[in-house]
Amino acid sequence: TDQRERQALETLVKTFKHAHFRSDTQRKAVLKVLDGKEDVFICMPTGAGKSLCYQLPAVMSTGLTLVISPLIALMQDQLEHLENLGICSETLNSKMSAEERRRVLKDLSGDKPETKLLYITPEQVDTDSFKSLAEMLMERRLGVPCIALTATAPKQVIEDIVKQLRLREPMSRFKQSVYRPNLYYEVKMKDTIGDVFEDLKIFAIKSLGGAAEKGENWDEFGCGIVYCRTRDSCEEVAAHLTRKGIPARPYHAGLKSGIREGNQIDWMAGRFPVICATISFGMGVDKSNVRFVAHWNVPKSMAGFYQESGRAGRDGKQSYCRLYYSQQDRDTVAFLIKKETSRSKKKDKDAVQELLRAAMKNFEIMISFCEEVSCRHWSISKFFGDDKPECGKSCDACKEPREIEKQLQELRRGMFA
Ligand code: ADP
Ligand code: ZN
Image (cartoon, rainbow, N blue to C red; front, top):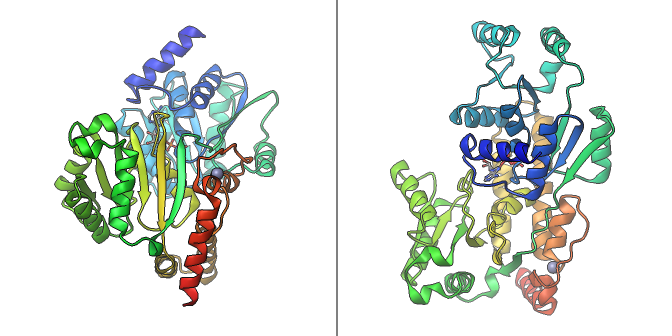
């Protein structure tokens, strides 16, 4: 097994270009899947690196790995990512040309298929053409292990999945809790702060351990991300911070790609500490010494908020996540959610209503997060179906509940004024 682990690590570095496993759960899950003896159930929060748990074993094993995934958009991302890594992966779907399809099928039915991973949708599994392909593939090898991966995990849902997929005992289960003890979570009411930019500056300095006073070697002290909803606020926040002595640059889709990528590269290299970005920033960005993540605007969903704020403290050191909240902002975001769903391409009116309801429900969870005095870590854990974590005093609601209550009262008074 030691040798197996060494080989896995080698593949991780050489093929997947990662220096180490993201977590102990990821490492153990990979090794178990590689083992190939049992069905495996893997439950990890979004962004924790589930894909690697089957992709790495797929690369190391002989033969084909079949991936059944419900979202075509996500599937396309995966295929592109694998192609960039030089891993041969294919898909079969109804939108392909007959010729493309033939090419894929020909490879799969050959003696030595080049394809390592084949992605299909659950609908495809049900088609006759797939069934005959599956029969042919499975005939070659009985007892193929099944791996199930999911992010959300209320216990009942897990049991349902196990049953529906007919996973077999004995089975290995991996569950990574969402609780991140080294992250301090807090919510600040924008309207109760006199100068919000000054407040952000102080927060940045505190998070970076006073580095701003020294004004050089930024990377030694780590760095930060400020997520903003609009391009304008990315520019505005970056300008304010820079003027106040903390070099910051924007990152958003309105910048020329050369400048945008340059800003990302320089930030990654530690040439300036703070990047003020729209949420498009961060996909694939993996910087371990992010000391703070601030949300300048309220996020649309807890899943997104968790993922974005979770970019802080990957190295396990104390880091800070602050959300600036205002009711005006809340109303703007609610309005935008309605506008975006009404513009959705779905023709079916009921489907649009369904989308809107789901989006608003997600947003309301975020609003409650901000407008209630309740442990922030617990709120996050609850959302993901985890038990109550031992927060101690690693959130504002646990550390200074009176202060938070006072802020909220001010907020409500403002609302009725
Ligand atoms: P999930 O499916 O759990 O939401 P993904 O599999 O999409 O997460 O991975 C999220 C990000 O983490 C991807 O950008 C991926 O490349 C990256 N990642 C996965 N494993 C590692 C690792 N061991 N080291 C660094 N980055 C990793
Ligand atoms: Zn708490």
